[in-house]
Image 1 (cartoon, rainbow, N blue to C red):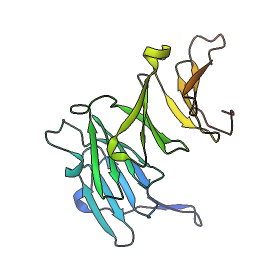
Image 2 (cartoon, rainbow, N blue to C red; image 1 turned 90 degrees about the vertical axis):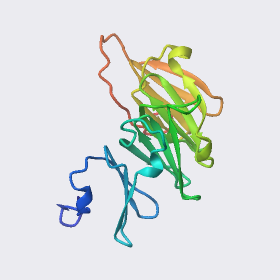
Image 3 (cartoon, rainbow, N blue to C red; image 1 turned 30 degrees about the horizontal axis):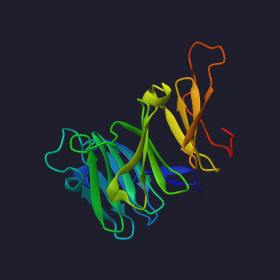
Length: 219
């Protein structure tokens, strides 16, 4: 749908008949004005509003031999270099805008560090793109070197007994924050050191499912 702020109304956006019935999971407008759509079965769709052309991108993101359902795309993220990070079943892919090519990182054929079942993607001020798994693993790759994939990985379960990561974000002071079961964690991105704060305060269950960064050390 397109929303018209003047009238406060929504207008359905038409898509090609061959994509009708497609389950859409995520939408991203990139800096060039193109719309990317992640689907659960049709791969990646791209719409260029200038040419009115739709493009289906499926084969470039499914290297042989591919896993079942690797075409399921759940999250799209554009980094500071304009690259598109694609969270999908079995791992992730990156579209390198400078070279007009896709790099696929699937758990079947990729060495450590590698992530699959990714929850969120954020970028810090140094151009590090962070990805996390809910199981307590977080890692980053470089926006300027997408072909290299992930560079550094933290296993918070092994290092700090943090068994899950529900939410991540970066504040205005370039600190990475995470929300786990009953704890709020902060990674000093200059020293690469973690600090953790308990959120339990005497309650038996943790009702907090997300947070919002308001400024330096204000969550």
